Image (cartoon, rainbow, N blue to C red):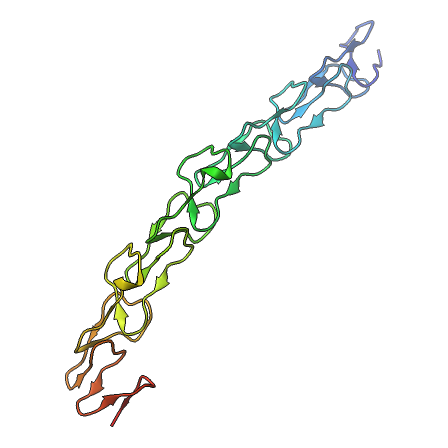
Amino acid sequence: VGCTAGSSSSAGAASCVVCKAGHYAAASASVCLDCGAGQFSANDAASVCGDCKAGSFAASTATVCSGCAAGHSSADKSGSCETCTAGHYAAASASVCMGCGAGQFSANDAATSASSCSDCNAGTFSETAGASVCEACTAGHYAAAASASVCDQCQIGTANPDVGSINAAACTACDFHTYSNTKGAAVCGKCESGTDSKNGWMTCCGLGTKYTEKLQCSN
């Protein structure tokens, strides 16, 4: 028997059997096939299965696609939803998980909204979106305010050996006989023999020379 699409018949059968919802068949099919994972057919006699849209999913033989629960997401034609990883969140039926903004973090999986994202504390930072933890400012740096995406550098002539500093006061001027000639210094360098410096200098000058406003040594 030559069956129409949406029905099938086995060899020698006298009539065609209509495919049930969740199944399909092309014309002259000998058997109705299952709709695959990520697909569905809502009605009997389907000739093709429809694809689930992003934000929904379906197991095989589904008659309908279900929306992803909050804290999860899916792409088109998905058989299941992916859990949002720490640093990300999603409302119900989301196609993608959104990342917490730079300067924020979220420690738990399956977060359901932006309110799950917390600001980094002073002295810490998160440089990119989607952070699961804030990092402490490294030596030579500080973050005075919460929600920092970068830490500020100590200025030339100062240094800070500590991590996680919360204000510029942590950057102390280089003492006599030491210097720092770059921003973000963790320690001040020692003057070489035959040179010297004063408090807060960026370089060491030869004995008998002085330090000018142009940050240079002069006679």
